[in-house]
Image (cartoon, rainbow, N blue to C red; front, side):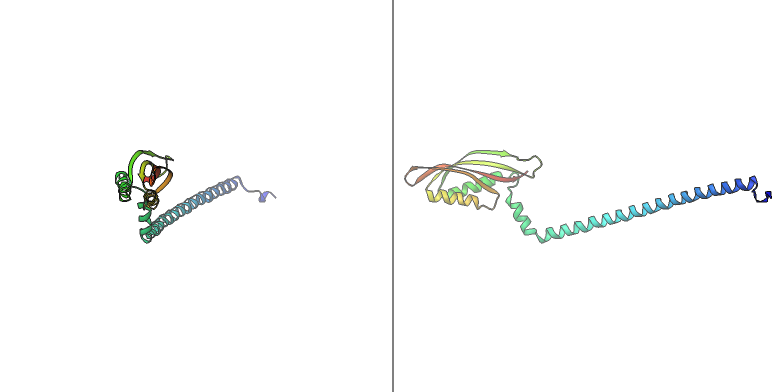
Length: 174
């Protein structure tokens, strides 16, 4: 009747075998999950590199396609160091319209520290006929650069002769 009770050695062997099997199972599970994680990381890294390359190609093709509008936008902003040339262009436009002028002030200000542009505020005293002054102000607003006419103040000193000031902002790259 006591034949069905296993011997102490058999119980110990079965327990050690079961413990070894459990350790082997979880060890294998850990190794397989690490290999899968490595494969996924390599896949995402490759995908990321190919995504970056594709994005670079797309941006490059957009830049090539839009070369002319990009150049127009770059020309809109006065380049750093070209302010004197730009002021000379404004002064030559004033001379061409027969306007007497004097640049009263030039003030450089940056609205936001992280912005790529800064504003150059220019104030000019002008004098000339109504037609010439208005033509000059219109020409300022139509220049191919970023110019915003802020304020115009004119008074009639003598009949046909107007004097005053014009204040405008030039947009410049930092």
